[in-house]
Structures are given as C-alpha cells and as structure tokens.
Amino acid sequence: MGHEPESRLQGLVREYLDKNRADLHDTYEKSFALYRRADRLLLEIMDNIRPTNDEQAEATTAHRCRVLCLRFNKAMRAAFLLIENDCTVDAYSCLRNMLECCLALAFLLKDEEQFFEIIGDDVALSLDGIYRYLTKTYMFEELGKDGKTNISRHILEFGKTKKKGAKRADAGTFYNETKEERNSQFLYLVYKFISNVYSHISPRSLSIDIKDNDGRLRYGGISRQEMDNFTSYAIQAFFVFSQRLDARFLNDRHEEELLDVLESMRDCTKREA
Image (cartoon, rainbow, N blue to C red; front, side, top):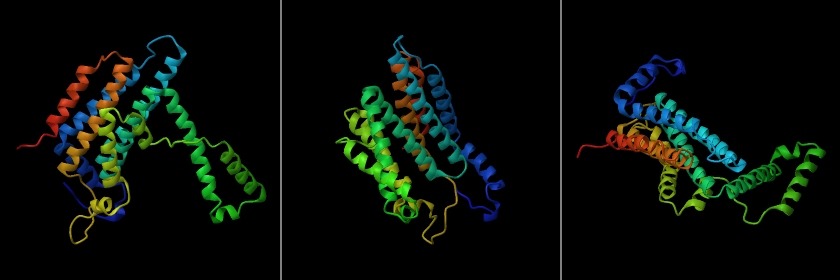
C-alpha cells in the first residue's frame, strides 16, 4: 500500500491522507482492532494497580509502576496515530520506547532501590555532559563571567563527587540488569533491530523512504510485512509489560485475556504456507 500527495503544498490538511487512513483500516482491520483491544486492556490494568499491603513502600512502588505504565501507553497510542498518518518509521521509534519501558519495568520490580539510584546518577551525568559540551562551543565564550564561573564550578564539584561506575538510565543498562530473563533478552534484541533499521540515521533506515531504484521518494503507506512485524513486536511488548503488572499487583486477574490477545496476534500475522 502506498501513495503520493496530490500537492506538496497541501500540508496536513489533505483529502488523500483521510482516504489513505480509511484504506489502512480496511486493509489491516484485524491489526488495528487488536491494537485497540490491547490499549483498552492496558488502561484497565493501569487503573486497577493498587498496593498489595498497607506499607508506604508498596504504595510508592505501585505509583511508580502506574507512571511507567502511562508512559508505555502514550508511546503505544502515538505509534497507532503515526501509522494512521503515514509515519511508519516514527511509529517504530515509538515502539522502541515501549520496549525500553518493558526493560525499565523489569529492572524496577527486580531492584527498585538500584533502579532509582541509576536514575539519579543519570540526571547528574547528563547535566555534567551538557556543561562539558557547552564549554567547547562558541556559546560558552559568549557567556558572562558569572555564567562561566558557575559552569566551571559545577564541573569541578561533579568531578570530585562523581560515583565510580555511574550508569546511564537507558535500555542497555536496564537490559544488563535483567539479562538473565528470557523476556529481556528477546525485547532487547527487537530494540536493537528497530534502532538499526528504523530509528538511527543510516543508509538502511534512509532507504525505507526511497520507493524504487530510480530514487523516487516513498511518501507514505505501510507494507503488509512492515505491518505484521509492527503488530507482532508491539503486541508482544504489550503482553510482557501487562502480564508483569498483572502478576505483581492484580494476582493474574487478566491472565486469560492477555493470553488470548497474544494468540490473536499470532493468528493476525500468520502467513499462508
């Protein structure tokens, strides 16, 4: 499935885009229906996350998991909207965010204290990195004396207090802390694949926007293979993420429904032999 705009000056107000959206839903009806079903189930799980006892620490854990669940859900919805609006590559980047949330949740529930220790380290590392970069640019030279002094003081103080072995809060770190889990191994593999093929600016990712050997551009549309891959990866990420929350807070209340969504995904993306 693919098309080109009638006029590049039409911008986002384009009849062809509305028609293409309708065609997408007709062509991939099962995928879109399954995605909406997963979205509703995830929201139900998120709304029902509650502490399992009266301890404050458990209430904090539940709240943090709900926050991470909301981040996952927003990325999931954004991916849906991007596919509808001819932004396949960007939809895959949102899927990558979903996978990172899965790895983060695995780490959070394994060792919450260490998880937030790394989050704190990441804030300090990131700020220090920004300041160190700034000192090498023309913008630093244009700062006043006080501004230069404050930045230099921060860099000096951070150098004295920097924790040995401080880590970035990213998918790679979350994976390394949970790599004994089969789910983490699979999800990180998909994360690396999407990063290479869709998210990074590389010959491979840029070639997706080239339609043919003549170099004509591919303005939109998503192929059956791309849609099947997206549906498979997104629903598996949804399943792992939701099942973990369901087991941790809801006593596996939604286990059967989650398994049915997973089986429906396999049927939706199944190819004839």
